Amino acid sequence: MPTTESFIAFLLTAIVIIAVPGPSVVFAVGRTLSLGRAVGLVTVIANAAGTSVWILVSAFGLNALIQAFPGLLSIIQWLGVAYLAYLGLKAILNSKRAADESQQFEGAGKSLGKVFAEGFVVGITNPKVAVFFTAILPQFINPSGSFLIQFLLLGLIFEVLGVIGDSIWVLGAATFREWILTKPSRMRAIAIIGGVLIVLVSIWLVLELI
Image 1 (cartoon, helix red, strand yellow):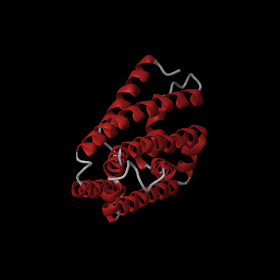
Image 2 (image 1 turned 90 degrees about the vertical axis):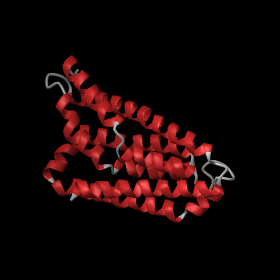
Image 3 (image 1 turned 30 degrees about the horizontal axis):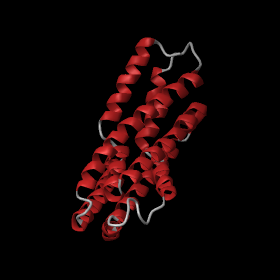
Image 4 (image 1 turned 135 degrees about the vertical axis):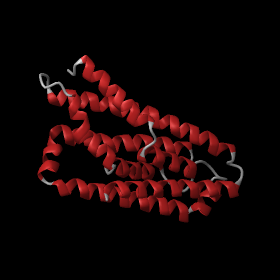
């Protein structure tokens, strides 16, 4: 198991990373503003499921694979950026329909299964998460213990903290959204804002990649 000092350091690092709004938070908030609380919460869970894949593949050797083929990580990063940009532009172009649907019921026109699939893809292609699990988390592993068990345990703790933190952001965004839900014109503006936020995330990530 990790030493007490390493575990405390890991918790502090994880809390700081999660507390500061990053791509996952902005994406989830954008979906919440565009489609409502249910979609936002499903996005959070789906994103966690996607990022959890990095825990498994990193624990079982992807880190070594990426070190052997550095271009692999770059490909994954650029795919994630492109997908985010696509979803953001789609939200902007469909803003009028989102406003109309808001008068019917939350998340109308988009199945939660599709929402989950989209959130999963964003999570699994999130370059920040990939770097965290492949390069940062291993620093807190105790060499005298089982690498696999420690990695999976710390990864699980990070995911639980992430779901809690992202859900708080989503619930806050949903409260604001519902306050003006009866205003179609404002709802359309919020849908556009949500899309713009997602596009900004993709631009933000591009600037970090180049």
